[in-house]
Image 1 (cartoon, rainbow over the protein chains, first blue to last red):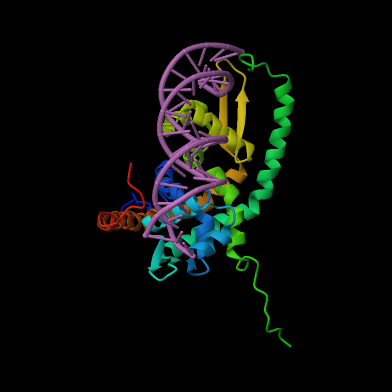
Image 2 (image 1 turned 90 degrees about the vertical axis):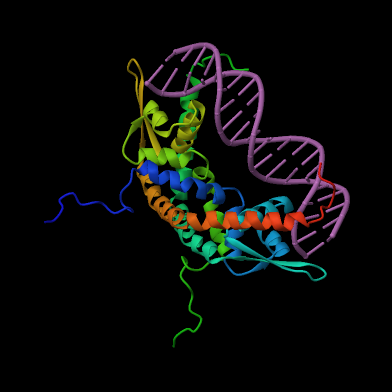
Length: 143
Length: 143
DNA sequence: CTGTATCCACTAAGATACTG
DNA sequence: CAGTATCTTAGTGGATACAG
């Protein structure tokens, strides 16, 4: 009776191009310059605005505010405001935000492991660039 | 006998901020609009320039060229040119490039699983924006 | 302290036309 | 076919000043 046309499981199947489409919005959120750093900082526990600012170093107020607002918007970070004087605002990863740490760590592992190879490839590439560049006739004259 | 001060393993340890720093260059490469799509397309096997262009749809020649060059630079993609007429160029993932698919899939899984939650969070956020926005006095007059 | 507002520099990206 | 050259536009990010 068994159906010889066994359907493959969704996680393994799918045209890879399809799968890629799904990652795009996620990468759009975490792929910018600051988001992962903020998430990383918050992975230790709740922090106040200026704490994050100091922890990251190099981030402008503007970018920190924008990044936090973006993360809050997507439910990755929760914002708790205490209307004291002076005001105090705590930021904390939500469950959703914490769950993101897992694939992020996988990516970090890859990065740590393969960065030397990537850097080596760049050097290699730069060298070839020079060699071919010298005898390469340009389409048009350079400015 | 036993040292009560057991050193944690390097993969678990480390100030999370440190770990984040490592991911930045990687995200800088794959976090843009087109790179993952190109990698995804190539994950099936080698492809020619125009094949990729058609597969992705929406990408401009310029962006495809730049993306491919970037990937080649970092050793994720290899470029093979056949000086025939008309010319033919094959692009293919290197071992390094293929290894990237693994963490990328992890990220995709996360994206697929949690995107509904993210979208819901956005709606929620938008609603609150409206409510608070109405009674919120602005710092300065809007333009 | 926790942001917002504004101006400015830089870059990324699309459209178009053209070459080997 | 497989790109390059160039222009133009949109978005990103930094610096600074200021408000609640």
